[in-house]
Amino acid sequence: MCVAVPGEIVRVENDGTAEVDFGGVRRVVSTALVPEVRPGDFVIVHAGFALHRVDPDEARQTQELFRQVLDELPS
Amino acid sequence: MNFLRDSGPSGPELISGLVARLRAYRGPPVAIMEVCGTHTVAAARMGLRSLLPDGVRLLSGPGCPVCVTPVDLFDQALYLAQEAGVILATYGDAVRVPGTHGSLGGARSQGADVRVVYSALDALALAERNSDREVVLLGLGFETTAPTVASALLRARQDGVKNFSVLSAHKAILPAMEALLQDPEVRIGAFLCPGHASMVLGAKAYAPIAERYGVPCCVAGFEPEDVLVGVLRLLDQVQRGEARAENAYPRAVSAAGNRAAQEALGRVFRRVPARWRGLGEIDGSGYDLRPGFAPWDARKRFLQGIRFEGWEPPGCRCAEVLRGRIEPPECPLFARTCTPQQPVGACMVSSEGACGAHYRYRGRADG
Ligand code: SF4
Image (cartoon, rainbow over all chains, first blue to last red; front, side, top):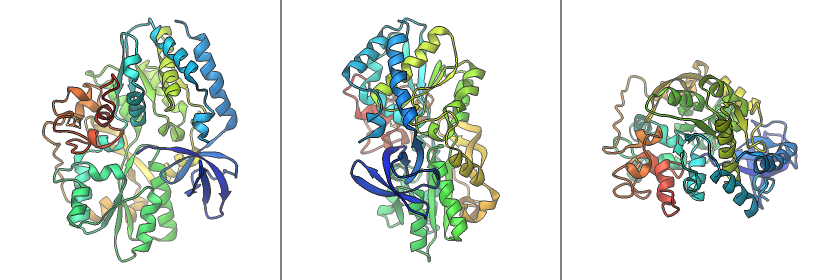
């Protein structure tokens, strides 16, 4: 039930919705819970609502984090 | 592209490196609970249990929404659909959960108007299209789903939609984690925290639990790499004798979470004691509609003064599965009389339920 899917904002409408591209499939989702989104943003969508705007910097941190885990953990 | 997957580091060499790290763990024995149903599925699919070093156990937690919803809630929904004659809208899994007198799906085949919706907004639209009928949404789920229902209710009030209401079974995940830590029969050494509910709550939300109970917490994503890194971060804390709230899923979860979603939750719901299947009543763990939303509260509108007993299916051990006390195959009904096609208990219905996940991936040295 908790399936949240990432997609890219294609167009923001002025009625609190946006068109989101999920790898080629487009759907209209509510942006009521992420009012600040703009076209080109990646969002995570759950149950018809965008719930999180992916911050590209935070996304990049993942790379570092994983490297760290691989290199630094004592074994 | 799948941004979450493709922006994460990946590749077989990363995975094998992480697995080697995991196998090399020589710290104290520990039981890690994966709180969230999506982690239950991810762990089963990748055969995580077979990769764990000696002394490290993985317990499935209470994070499958339909699994923790007590039977009488489904009885209430069934009553609304059959006796009160409403259009009962809910999410796919909830339709198949056995209630005391059968499932919503069974009622539908006997003529009750039960509709599966993807979003709370779909249920609201259903009400707008059927202005001569009452539409009730059986709303369940944790902090991932509850804000979406809150948002739909705010819309309904703003637009003056009067034939829409919500039967709220929404739950707060943090009080359940605390309740499990206080249960003397359950020994949890670390929490793998949910990726999705944390989008709303924020990774910092687990800090009080980590500090108060000395239990390491780490938010993790759902790709195999994510799960491995989450487990490794937890083991690192265990080995060092630390207990912090960490975030191994920064590409989807921020420290403070989603403010707008938290605000919507607070405006529409108040926290009340709530009963969980398996865990009993937990203080402050339920999201009930605020008095200001009484006109949209299905409980107040249709169910006042009616008692629902809620009998658990005989023989089902969901209650113990949900607390991490037994593994699904230890239930005598598992894969015998209880299968995803013919579920006896809620934990087998949902793909996120521990029994359902174990059943599906039985071949992977995991079941
Ligand atoms: S296998 Fe079926 S009957 Fe047994 S605990 Fe799981 S859901 Fe209940």
